[in-house]
Image (cartoon, rainbow, N blue to C red):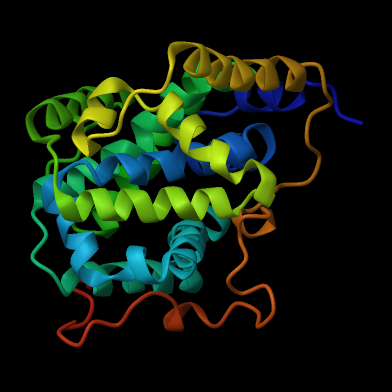
Length: 295
């Protein structure tokens, strides 16, 4: 049995400028596996409130017609570089698949950079609010370094340098671009329905209230969601905080927990996960990987 601070002590011995991959693995798979999954899911959810992002996702039909498959494929493809490092052939295949899917559409660099910012800012803020402890500074720096590297592999330009810059860029972009879009609302509704399906049927009607309770007001306004009753919001947020306090008294996780280990990962439960090169969507207009790998 590991003491609760086992991995914190380990992280304290690592340099986030050089050991960022190891730090993020420990943080997301040992310290905060469930919280990281929720935070990254919520990060993607925020992007639907930008009409150019949410509207495009609606036109593909991937989130409204094949939500579970898209959820599982995204989890697998995004996790490969974290599991094996960016130079591993499987990680390269996963990133190539991501780039091929993105390359089929006219997506602005600003939107791509914003989505990348959500992957940095949202987990940091989630842990501050609901984790059993806030992220250590080493974890925040490592998170920024990891996603900056991912962004370079996706050919994203003008990537923020620090986690503070990632957070500031996210806030500025949302303040300027959050707005209602019917397509974005459909994607948000479909995703919310998917999240509800992860829980027993008797509690599924409560998931909508819970989801709206943990959304901030600008996000709710962008989707034109009604604010839940204040007591419901307080109870929902309080339940997450209580979970964090309970977890702080439990031993540290010995074995890493991957995204596929979560009960929400169901699409490939019977058939098994296909090769990485077969995951995701294959739009007819996809020209191939748009990023040069010569260097």
